[in-house]
Image (cartoon, rainbow, N blue to C red; front, side, top):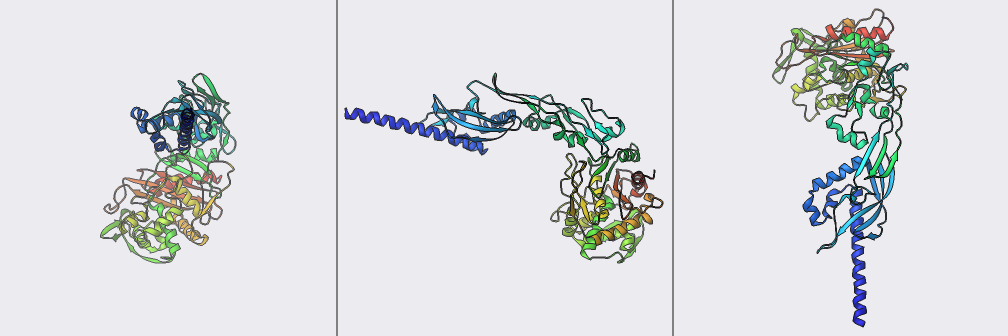
Length: 538
């Protein structure tokens, strides 16, 4: 009788110990899930489950379920009772669309010689699922928000995305289309319907999140509803785009394969973006000398009056870099800048050194995201990778591996126009202006004097406006190796960045015409045309 009682008590103890270990196993599994530690979860699976599912396939099922539910995080509660072969764990699942769901996760447990294991099954993929049920989401989009110009004129509205100024809107708004295959998983995780029309480019892409509104829908466990969420219309977005300047930029490009950016230096507001404004990067050529001059003046390597020899070329590390058309130039630093003298600025760049050149370029915005979705980043190699003195000298004149967009070069011009403060570009009307201090007002003022000389008597005279002081810089970027090319009459990109009036600049304009000759011949007149429009002189 005593032995029977002892045996019965031992059975109860063993049973209780087994239940405790199973509950502890379930708690550990869900805790690892909350941390995103799928390898640890996989190690808790039964041998049979691991034979059936690879670790990659196991994690992929969780990823698919998370996308379906738009899951952001889970938080397990106190482990509940054991019901048959399942341990019940209360879980709070936070989702992007459906808010926070409080459901019971059923963790199937199997025995084994070495202790209990988790038997992988469908109930583990999301709280609330029962055996045999599949997680399903039906998503709904409400009306897309409108896009407005800075004066309130619609640029895109309604299902047809129409505008009363179609020429302007067609240049900047962008298009809607099916979800690209490469981005399907991203949109799925955000909760978009599979057949949604989403932004492909332009302002539609830049403001996609605001315009789409709140995605709604129903989350199902088989035929049962786990959650519902109503869709809400997208927001109306008022942009900084000025229809008059956008049309002026379109006209100035004249249908050419080219790009133009117009920016307000006092706010960073992007007033016009036409063509390849930020969708292409090219060697900036001599417009890069704005950056190099800033670094040179800051470091004290030269002043505006420092004299340099008149030469047709310069030799760095045994390589000869020629001036455009073998022109003989030199004289003061101001004059060398005005006539865009490579034989002065390439050696100056080499003397300046990689560290100072790259550091200054980065303060101007190189190697930093633009903050405009879809805009390409302008880049310069790091000081450690830029290369030898020849490479640094080539970079200082906008060659080598330096790449820039008109958005970046317009922002550089705006930095000088605003006394050394770089405005952070924005397309949101009324956004609080933000600035980065790049250089001192004194240095910026000296660079401005050099840019005035460019337009007054240098390579940018085509940008002159009668009765108005204009500052600017030409760029003629060679698309072959500068160390071996004697002139740049062909195969060159034409650049110009300029602003007016000096002292109280209204706008800064940058134009790029790829494979279009000299900056002073092609880009400067286009910029002048937009400056005239901005000043109301046209």
